[in-house]
Image 1 (tube, each protein chain N blue to C red):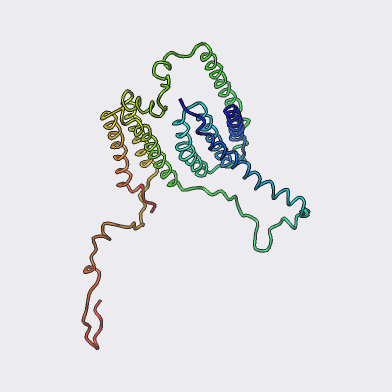
Image 2: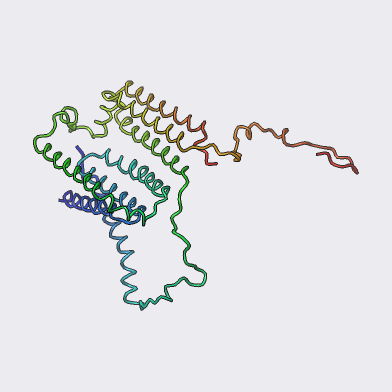
Length: 203
Length: 124
C-alpha cells in the first residue's frame, strides 16, 4: 500500500520534473529540475530494491554530474533569443530523432514482453539472501575484473584529457612554495647586528 | 532482497519536510492576503533610491577552470563509489578482490600525481 503510494509519488514527480527540464526557458532552471528528477529516480530505485544504484544516483549524478552540467551551462555563452530562433530550422531533425527514440522504445517493450533476453538471466538474477551491493561486489571484483580495471583506465584517460585540454600554466603568478617555506630557518632570515652609534645601517 | 520497511522513516521524514516547506511558503502568502492591502503600482514596484535598473543579465560566463575542478571531483567521486561494494564484499572476494582494488587505486593515484605535478589542483 505505502509502496504503491510512494511509487506513484516518485513516478509522477519524475515525469513532471523531466518534462520541466526540457520546457524550462532558463537552462539553469533546467539543470535544477534535472536534479529533482535524479532524486526521484533514486527513490524509484530504492523501491525496486536496487539500493546501491539509488546511492550512486544521489552521490554521482546529483553530487557530481549535475554540478558539471551547471558549470557547462554557465560556461557557455548562450544567447537565448538566438537559441529560440533556430527552433523552426532544427524541428525536422529533432522530430526524426524523437521518432527513432519512440521506435526503439516500442521495440524494447515488445522484446521485453516477448520473454526477455536470456543473457540477462544467467548472472543478473539477484541472489535472494544477500544485499545486492554485496552481490555486485562479489561479481565486479572477480569475474568482471578486466572491465573494472578498464573502467579505472577510462577514468585515468578522462582525468589526463581534462587536464591537457583545460589547464593553462599561467605566467606572472607566484604560487606558494611550501617546501621552500619549510626549509627556511631563522638564521636565513634574521641577522643580529651590534650597531655602533653614529654610523649608518648596512642593509 | 531489500527490506523496504526500514526506509519508511525516511519516507515519513520526506513527507514532513514537504508539508513543512509548503506551509512556510504558502502560509505567509495567505496571511498577507488577509492582513495587508495589495495595491501595486509602477512607482511602488520601481527601484527605490539606492537601487538601479540592472545593466545586464546576472548570468556571467564562468572560467573554464571550474570545469576542470568538477571533472576531477567526478572522477574521485566515482572512485569512492567503487569502494563501497568492494568494502562490503571483501570477505568473499579475498586477495584477488583486494589486489584488483589496489590496482584500480594505483591507476587513479597515477592520475592524481599527474594532476598535482601539472599544477591542476592549484587555483593560481
